[in-house]
Amino acid sequence: MNLSERIKLILKENNLKQKELASEIGVSESYISMLLKKPDINLSNSLAALIEEKYGYNANWVLYGTEPKLKQVSKNKSLSEIHQKALAQLEKMNDEQVKAVIAFINCLDEIENLYPVHKK
Image 1 (cartoon, rainbow, N blue to C red):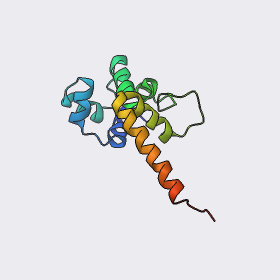
Image 2 (spheres, rainbow, N blue to C red):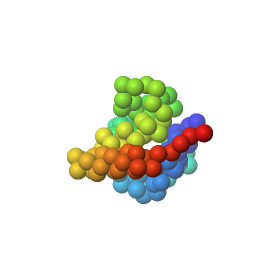
Image 3 (tube, one colour):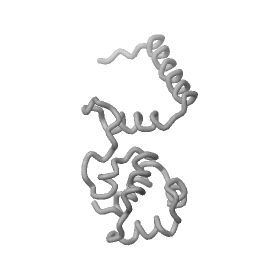
C-alpha cells in the first residue's frame, strides 16, 4: 500500500472529504489532491505526526506503511483495531465529552441488566 492509498483509507475510515482533512492538518485541498494522485509525493514527518494526533494513525504507518496502523494508546496490545480507535477518540475529548460517553456506557449496562440476553 503506497502513501496515496493510505491517505485514501484515512479519508474513508473517518468519513472525511479532502477539504476537511486539509483544514485539520493545515494544508491546501490541492495538496491533499496531489497526495492522492501522485504516489511518489512525500509527506513530511510533522504532517504525519498531526495525522497521528488528530486521527490516531501511527505516523510511521502513514509515512511508510509500517505496522501497527493505529497509534497504540493502551498497554493492552491484544485490543482489536476498533477498540484502539475508540480509545484514540476518547483521548481527544474534553472532560465533559468523556463524562457523556461514560454516562452512555452506564446506560447500556443498565439496559443489559433490565433485559439480559440469553445466548444459546
